[in-house]
Amino acid sequence: MDGKMFARLAAVIAIAVAVTAAAIHLAREGSSTAARPSPAAAEAPRTDQLRETLRRCQQMGEPATRDPQCLAAWDENRRRFLSPAAGN
Image (tube, rainbow, N blue to C red; front, side, top):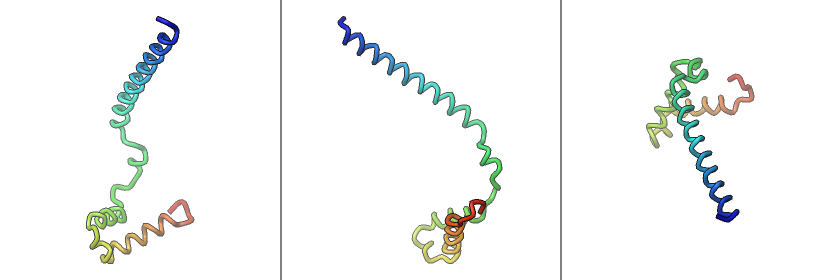
């Protein structure tokens, strides 16, 4: 076996080991993080009326463009998103 062939074989083995190690790490990390809820989810209020309204409007489809509640919800969502105050 010449030097080039040995270097290629070593590179292929190193890449295979790295991919296997990454897959094992991600599999272990995914199972541990799925068990515990995120802090943001724990602190968020259970019901957000605007979010529920926006979700309902999204499911309505095209008729939502004429629904006054959906139009008001979209206006409020735009106001919150584009508001200069970060706390809102």
